[in-house]
Amino acid sequence: MERMSELSPRRRMLVLAICCMSLLLVSLDVTVLNVALPAMQKDLGASVAGMQWSLDAYTLVLASLLMLAGSTADRIGRRRVFQAGLVLFTLGSVLCSLAPNLDSLIAFRMIQAVGGSMLNPVAMSIITNTFTDPRERARAIGVWGGVVGISMAAGPIIGGLLVDSVGWRSIFWINVPVGLAALLLTLRYVPESRAAKARRPDPVGQVLVIALLGSLTYAIIEAPSSSLTHTLAFGAIALAALLGLLYYEPRRAEPLIDLRFFRSVPFSGATVIAVSAFAALSGFLFLSTLYLQNVRGLSALHAGLWMLPMAVMCFVCAPISGRLVGSRGPRFSLLMAGVWMTASGVLFAGFDAESSNVTLVVGYFLFGLGFGFVNAPITNTAVSGMPRSQAGVAAAVASTSRQTGGTLGVAVIGAVLASGIGADPYKEVFVAAARPGWWIIAGCGLAVLVLGAVTTGGWARRTAERAAGRMEDGEDGGGSDAQGRGGEKGVRGTAEARTTR
Image 1 (cartoon, rainbow, N blue to C red):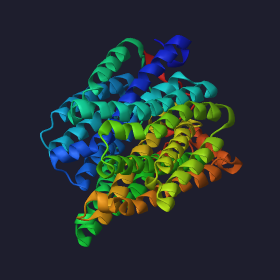
Image 2 (tube, rainbow, N blue to C red):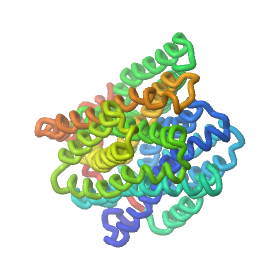
Image 3 (spheres, rainbow, N blue to C red):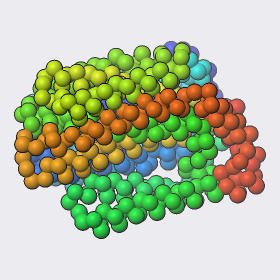
Image 4 (cartoon, rainbow, N blue to C red):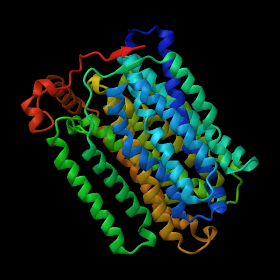
């Protein structure tokens, strides 16, 4: 029997490295795929909506299943779920490389996403239970965030090289050796762990989450080419699913989404910030890739090189942000992120940054600077102060917010772009059609700035302390059943996670 918190420093760093490999798999897949979009579009004969679905089919399934994966890992074993995720993700990558058409690619991307849903939130839960000291945890999360920067820097170059030399199908091959290596290392070095008190399955809540995200995404992506009645019908389904969640979940003793988490203002703020930041990122990558290759006529590799200023700044700033969060809290990092992401969006939307090579590079530089600061404070705020026994659920909510933001960013900005382009060639109208999308990105940056200022003060911290205290004491349970058995169903933050080798 071995507690994860009692592992040697060397073993803890090895566990962190293995968890970071899973993040590299998922995040590299996104950045590499963005560079390959124009080649895939040409080879598969896909529309803008088709390209949106190749991205959103993945992020939609991922967002829908993250909380289920987190709570399942807390219940049956984090290492077991993590290993299953690596197997499914690697298998899905192989199938994607063999996809004969767009529909098959979308289906295989969904298989990838089922595996991906078992990786990042579970890995974050493993990290949270391995690094129990707040400062060590903040530094570990900084390293975790730095891996996103690595994927940003390496993804466009690796993707460009593979697309130009071998073809777009080869971008999925790189997941295979990384996935297999992570699987073998997990078997050897990561101890099994479970929550002392994990939630039971919540099938109704899970179906409502899938209905909400799926119908909302479908309504947005298909709006430019569908009738108003069709769009409103799916919008109504999304609204009904949301109302169902708000009604059903508080009445359940062990809900899929514990709404008590959101009584913490920092946690709620981190959730909305994650949606805003990752919506901006996905929209940024979508617009930039199509512009560089379809408008400027660059190859995939050259397009990747143009985006290096953004990627390098993400790589440099992420670990700096992690250290700042550990020493000074999340406020400064969030304010920096909001200022520079907003500035980048305004530069493109208001000053046509695409018209000059200099302003184009400056716009990419500023966005990378801002986004590099945002990831560490989101993750740290989401898991800090929450009971460790529910680390998987708390981390999964943060991860779900990221993926939901990514899904909505591609859906909304892609729909705006498709409406503006219509049947005209990209080169004639792309810049004008993309301008509303850049304003949306600027608005997302402004949301990060405002929420970063509002949700990190003394009042916000006090709400977090009260929320954590109620959860630890078993007060104010999730519903009538929970209130009747408050002590039994309450979450105990002092309970240690059970670990077995």
